Length: 282
Image 1 (spheres, rainbow, N blue to C red):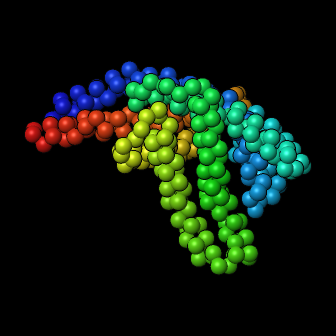
Image 2: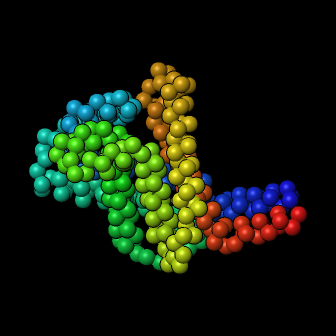
Image 3: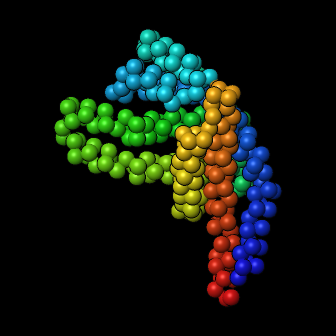
């Protein structure tokens, strides 16, 4: 039994090596970093419609973002709140989505490699798809921020203006961690279904990877946060340390996401069921 399990682990690792998971994870992490500033512009544009003040966003940026980056983010927040015209917002959203989609473009290529699919769509179609998922990701991130970060503020606003929804809002805020996990799971499930260039016959076959990725992202992010709070020394190299740690965190998250895709492939090929049958026979 042990030899069978070891052989399947070797097969899984060999498949990951053949699919260049490590290379695509690094590529995706790199382009996500390049897309950070246009994506931050898009995110800040959307967040200004939430019941939060400019001062709250500035305070969050100064407390939660490394000094090498938060100067830009703070100036961006001031600029967005200073010029909230419809024309500027429309141009900002379109330009930011198109620029930030480079990160998702790398993710699409990685998923095609994991699922063993040749890309037949033209460049502009892929770029439009990547832009669409960038916009969806921004909305998902805003919803997650609403639930996890601004939950109490929004609950107070709802209780004052829409008392009819008070019970529902209280339930969502009470289960904010579970709701955040559910949002993340649904987002990854959607990615595994729609991003690769293929027709999915059974959408439920993508559940294992989405579940593993959601748990992996939350678990690794918790460990990363614990390390930052207790062991990281930002005084040595300042903002450079923060950027390096951010890159490592992004690389690990991209790696976990591609591993989720490999898990889906293993389940869909029936390899996991063969392993179970082999274990039962021993």
